[in-house]
Length: 427
RNA sequence: GUGGGCGUAGCUCAGCAGGUAGAGCUCCGGAUUGUGGAUCCGGCGGUCGUGGGUUCAAGCCCCAUCGUCCACCCCA
Image: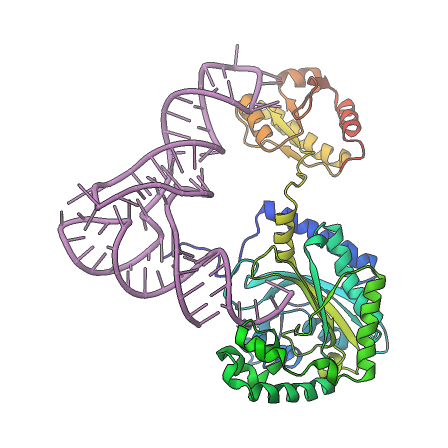
């Protein structure tokens, strides 16, 4: 029997990384909250049909990347490969998208059966936001702005490039796709194998092909903008004007196409070069037909999703040093059993009196020198020592570990005061 | 799903004409009866990813398999 280990593409996030991840999640949560978005907690498992209808049954995600589950009662279920479909389903089910405006966000793991790679895991963490009931271009800009604000807060906006495009309404896209397909058909000799395979099902996706010969064909292909009506053009222009007014840089990429069928009009993607091949950190767009497509009363919608694992990788590659959250650690050691018993209660009292300061009581024991070494390795800022002599006098020894200064023997109340003073506001 | 690189101690890695495994760091103990970070000394720790094969003998060669990394692909 082989060793037990995590299954392919599923990773453990260890304390060191977990801290960084929490920082990002907290920042994102704050940011979304500051824009008035409310959190939604959604199931990890949904009916397979939801993704087939929502994401599109011809998409790679649904066709070959879903983790499908045996539900025991026959209904095909899937681990969610993305969050929008579930969020829209919930919005419809609970009336959040009916005759009202909703601003929602969610987070959690998504699952896709892909070949693992840097920045690409089979279970990955996403934070997404969706807004329903607003058809105006200002919403598209606001969603992009949320990303922009968050990236700035995390200090990574310098490394992020925003690409944006419009793919028109469903109807406009249909005519465009026909024209595009015709053009590609007449040049099929120059297309690569992957693109040929897509010709039938999703010719739009050929637009972002990397093959040089295919790209040559694409360069002469009809452009979506020639198929948009005045309203669609105006919508896109308005989005761009808002971005300019918000001071957000962007690049129009006529070949930017999303791999999910539900998008209409605005699509965008924040991309970085720091991460290698998996550079898409956040992406989203408008999906005015999705609510209706999933059985709700027609309502406009738009949203985005941020890949937290990738954002973390980016933060790690950009921010070299990070403040240790253990910098306030208080380490308590005892030299004998009776002192240890007393110390465990004192620890609890300290946790109340110094709320926010982590208090570790050394439960392993041993020689004082050994415990002191442990305190040092744990990164303690202070050590509190209790032994027979302290017990006899009713005091505790407080020793600073990271700064100059002598240790002192203090009664409990004085010790708490000293610590509160030293920690000031406390971080 | 396709291609390539890599899997030796908890971590980073060495080992090679195929002869039965090593270093640094970590950890534990001591030098230093109640005081950490430095130094020195000692110790714990490996079915060499797994399974087969070739061989008197395999960490090293062959096959398979799993994992991992990178790229394709896809996307967050």
